[in-house]
Length: 413
Image (tube, rainbow, N blue to C red):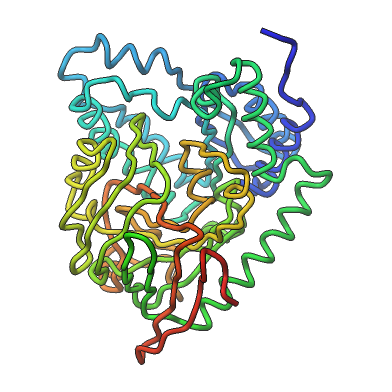
């Protein structure tokens, strides 16, 4: 190993950004952090800045890849139908008491790729069920939350396999800092400016109030109906507790809720999807009345098929997002094998649970009301990329008129 080290000033900038603009932590709030053990330099800095902002108490929960692999190698068979529901019940209770949520992404995106796919599927399903109390508070935007990333060693090796490990880690770190706007002199101001640009796009889309979006391009002829009374959002948003936060750092998307029963046609993925340690590539699906009726993938197809059978809503979509091909992450030319980054390189859709915040009017809609408006319900929420520089998107208004939204992957207005 050489003397290459991750830039400590940029670590500090990212931590400060995550606290002040990411989670938007308020004086007196508790902060719950989940993170891989490798990311402890960033977590320590986040804790420092959180306490400087007046945090009441910061609680980190760490994971370790080797311990995760030990389960799949040595645990008894019945282990894979169980999950730590007590932990997620506690997280749900914490969120009900206004605890802020922060997650650090950085694990090997293909950690479980060589493990028994049946065990992986069972464990994922058990986890999805157990995580419900925490997931619902997040998808309903009950509390302020945020995700940032750390360049884990295995992840760095996946992204830059031809580099020595220490160089790969530093290069991934720099890519994370650049994409997160933590490399500039004033990341806070940079995010304020970026949020304003996203607000302009969401304002235009909400004024248009499209009934549907039509996607056309290679292997893609897809019409996505939008939920009744949907609202486009992006960048900084106000949680139900009144706190403004940026849930994802980085984020280049504007997004809303599609109608779960009004999606028709075919679409193909434009980037690989890394899901729970498995790489799923070249996804091709056909929708009818909102439901996927045919699905294929060149890699990870077995896992994809199991995901689609997770529950009734898993084969329908709960999010549609627009991202220009010229986004900084796309222009970096790096495939991160990490949804947080790759989804911000291309327009995408998400299988499963919708975001209940993406509706006009009352921010605390009942599940029945969300369903009546077309919002999907599921134990999963999995983003995958369908945009590129060859995709056109048109907005379809209530009278059937077509208005250009994207041309060749770029905003048309």
